[in-house]
Image 1 (cartoon, rainbow, N blue to C red):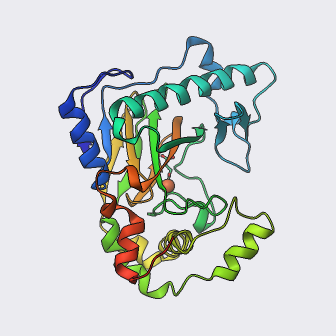
Image 2 (tube, protein in one colour):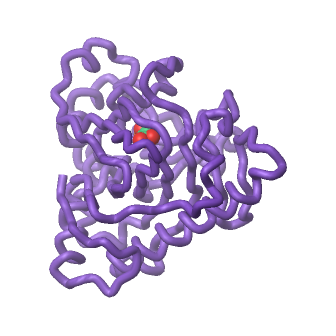
Length: 289
Ligand code: SIN
Ligand code: FE
């Protein structure tokens, strides 16, 4: 973890903070901002209830391109308040990431944001959906074709409850354990999934390997029970940012977080060789995208 003490969402930030942030992020660290809080407006008090989540989806999603909010059972009265909170958060997060990491400008896409109003601890899901298990992120329906997944999280818990994560081993060490059993990616399957609309665009060989990694790591009970990890507790009123396709993570406990996802072209990275795409290409000695 790399701690940065900025307390403003808007730059300009010190050059030392910017270059330290870029370096640590690309080396697979979690950037932690203990003094950076996203504070929802007073009118948002009613939104702090797990009742807002649709039971099937667990998270409420916000699409900045359409401003649509999905996956919520919020009432007619609550909906516009929820939408305004997520819109404000999404814009704030996007401005922050560009001010802190100006190198990524023009190569980063602001994707969906989410609101996570359900307590993680005690929630039961199928192994593949269970983020209490260590994993790297890979989305079954949204292939990235080599782009990075960068996510910013804010703990907005009004009762002061921290959000607890476990951080596992470096990506390369995880890949060394799990890659041999993954087999070769299958182009015809990727073609069929895209043709039938199961994926947004075609899964590259890279996407297939990343999804295989995500699934096999979560399914491996022996690995989950014995893997080394570091425990991080993000206090209410704090923010953190990391490449979740690289940082091996599990979310263990906590309620009420906001999250913004970005996709980044690896060409914009200071060190593209540290990306999961390039690491997996070196390990498999193949072009994966
Ligand atoms: C995850 O990406 O695994 C979940 C993170 C969280 O909700 O804190
Ligand atoms: Fe995750």
